[in-house]
Length: 597
Ligand code: GLY
Image (cartoon, rainbow, N blue to C red; front, side, top):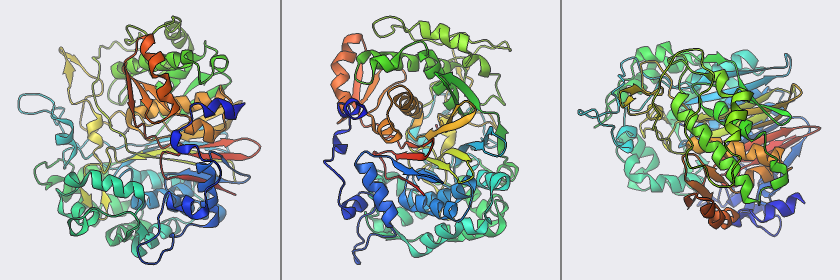
């Protein structure tokens, strides 16, 4: 039954007749090297996991599991877990390798949000390692001399967009709280791969080629990604001695070696001397950076509590709003092939995005109706707006219960997809869900000490006011830009049952909500839920995933009154279901895998 439900919508590119040959599966992520013909470092387990993904099957295990965007990073995490490390230890190893092999998406120069289920206490908590705005930044940072917003890429590329990185401090804080393995050893795989080289993946090669002009603007970035003026080629062996040295310093000195000393000086110099577009990040910003522990935000969906990252992320609130509004509708009955399901999901998402644009920002700086936004009575009232038969004509913000007087204008900030997601369960029962980013693909394009610097500040609204009314997500010194990252742990009866998250800019929210619905209502296993083609509606236009069965719903959506846009929707979902055993899935749209024992 499940198989027939999904088959009508399945990605055209995923309709394989059966398991691929091992070499073919390996080539899908890490092709042969130019000279020795060997697939680098891919073990039999990795190849089996790739085959499972390509065949649309989940991976199962009993003790631990790790799912992330690159097999080399997953293997680094698996080694740590196999040796008795915790999910927090494994995350450090995974992140350190991702920053090398998937540098365009996340790394030490960026920020992250982590959701943690602690098996010993039975509690959920979150860590906010989001980048912060430099103290010298003004709210007019992304405006020209006439107060007009800069063009997006004029703001992104260079020093102006660089926020204070949070990821190194987050790694250290997670390890300090929940680590079991010695810190220095967690850097070994990253150091070895950076020293000895790794094979450039097809995804990295094609993204470098597409972005070659911007990458060529800064000498250190160009030398790494465009050696001899040519984009890195797929399968080319790439070393990164500067990154190896950065990792050695962090392994020996912890995050103090990053936020002070030569690495910090290199960051400040790269930002403040960026040719054509210098920024304002200073040594003081780096020295003052703090990870913040925050309560999770949870919303009830069916028999589950869907929990994730609250402000400054809009992730858990917006995912929670979408699901909460759908509580009153029987999506299990309508199923994934019925247009009514997608109308409900799409318009719930539009209503949630209207609230997001009006109310959501860093609540350390602006008052927010955080609890009011996921209050069941409010969501039931908003959900009642979906009871018609056609697309909502108007999907404006609502009036959640607010304990402060406030008046905000709607935000217009743009987020383009990059980012990476890590899900891990360890043998002690701890669960980690972490989404990590440098924002745009290749971030600000500035590179120092072997890693790229983020452009996270462009997640702020470039406009500060609309018709004289302030915008909640405007830039302020020290503030953290609103995010869409939605690292999620789904709970049932007080126990974790699913860890999930994705990259994808503000479409992250739709990818995560859809996958939870597919898993909870449509009885799909995690691999099926992630592979199910995307239909995403944030601001009115229905995006349907090009080249998949979703395109077949275009005419019906048009008849309901939507504008439809067929396009690539490159999520990077990684999920682990926690039941009698662990069941993991990796998004077929990216290069990742799930691995467990
Ligand atoms: N920069 C992507 C996000 O935070 O949503």
